[in-house]
Length: 192
Image: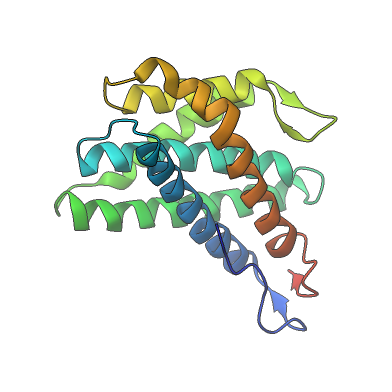
């Protein structure tokens, strides 16, 4: 997946809001690509709601992984602010997409935040490979199981394997590249 991951003006200070918004945009693209990848592998999705539910699960996973990836770069306060703004931006984007695809006058953000909080608690207790700085097996399996619950019945038993072996490595590579540029500031832009 191709993504722009560099700040245009490399000399200015980049705010936490800008970083969170950019990481949310990139995360949305990674999550949407997951749905397409699964469908291209002939895993069954039947409705727009089902696709959005898969995206929601992927976003919760990406927020959790990003939180783990930035733990040594930010103070607790900075990290809390960044993750909160990141999650809020994702909830707004989720709301807009649900309104466009499913209907208006429903608060989709509340469900998004509820699921996000549940998943963050689950992933907090999942294994993390400190040496490789990547999600461990239980972390990936939990994510695969959450995705499996959202997918159709056809080949459902193979979805978790697909997530663990193929999708998570690709997702994390794209997330790491984005974090490297957007959060680490290796594009010469300074995060403030």
